[in-house]
Image 1 (cartoon, rainbow, N blue to C red):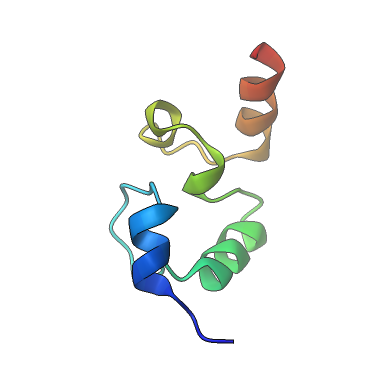
Image 2 (cartoon, rainbow, N blue to C red):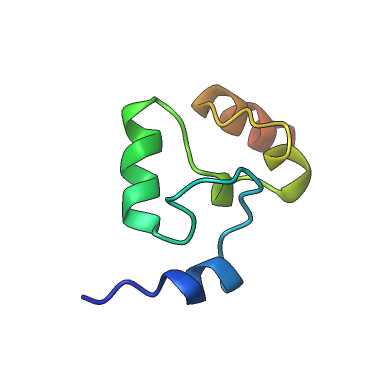
Length: 65
């Protein structure tokens, strides 16, 4: 399967942190999973900018909704 990193960046990736994984979803997911986190695309823009990618923050955010 071909990676569509440019399309991913344009359509799905709201990450504001500069890194080499931007748009390469499989690599990004593995990176964050190994750290016990979720990638930026799981969070709204306002929360993503806080750089708290913890699973606890994700749960807290959606419990409040």
